[in-house]
Image (cartoon, one colour):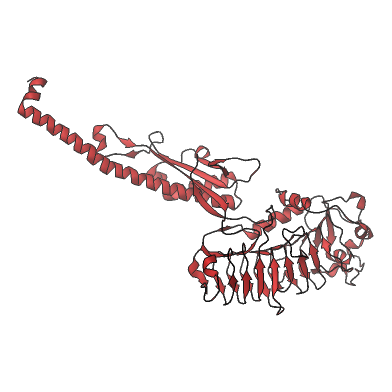
Length: 499
């Protein structure tokens, strides 16, 4: 029988019609079954890419190299889509992982901005030999699906918080006395926030944590304005110790990142009267702005005034590891041969560095790195400077309530910004004047009640690796200073669409 006859024959027509129905049903069923399978495979691939880009960004934020970032991404992909089951979805990591700066919808290397993004492309296709197979659609010639997906994670600025105005703690924040929190000021804990009653949160202030259920007394009936200020976010706080090390090594000339030193020098004046160093037998002809001065704690305390425009490596144990530091001649007092400081203490016996100058003058426009414990006494007055101690003591920084650190005037922005850093704990009275000061505390920080006077702090921030306890009343107001490399990074991880 010919095809024409088959077509016009009733039995033949029924057969062709049955074949048509079969093919139609196969396509419909194939799209339903194989299409759903492809959609699930794509969702799995997308979720894996999202987790992998997040893992890579966490490694980037932690200071990992490009190789370490790619390794973190590859490890994350292997955990969620092992090659033994899904094949090599990542292909060649150098081509499918992009590390760079996110701007205008694109991620690319930048000579002017730091890397802040990681993008990952994952694929299941015939080229990689891991295309998603079909079942029913195979009958009509479609044996597999090729799918691909991209995820980009970006470390973005936290909209709720300005990194220069706030209290940020990796541990808990505990406020056991009343405070007023001004507009633009942020309180954030990676753990919990515990407050007493009667803290007043003004409009525009913020208080947050990953889970707001961990905020005690966070109702307006207990603390007026807190409910409008409350937010929930898993903000990324830079590791405090890493940040302190970066600044310290930069100032001592032993680090790879020179930005902290560059930013410090850009904000200080020229070298002032060097006669106090000449009296200690330093060759002042070699000293210029930004010079590193290696000096013992006793000799430092003996100076009636502290020459500005310099970086001081002050030691209580042995000279600090520096690059290119200037030391006194061997016959000078720094050799520890008994010369007395003006305070009457032996140069070799200083364990705590007191920032009260014998003349009562302020210490300004200097960077001081020390292994000593630090004390800000009654007459201490520090302006436009960096004070960093590598002491890990639980009393690495202490102070008198009469000490003054930072701007002497309640003005914003301040040209008298002070940065105080320690690898230990800090315990100071809340009444101490600290306007326009950033504290970086690797351990715990405690603002103790040393006075009944309400202390107002303008542009004062705390970045704490441990717990932050505030047991004295005070007012906290933002100042909004410009950011530089001396400030720690605070942000949130966002997933974005790239071009």
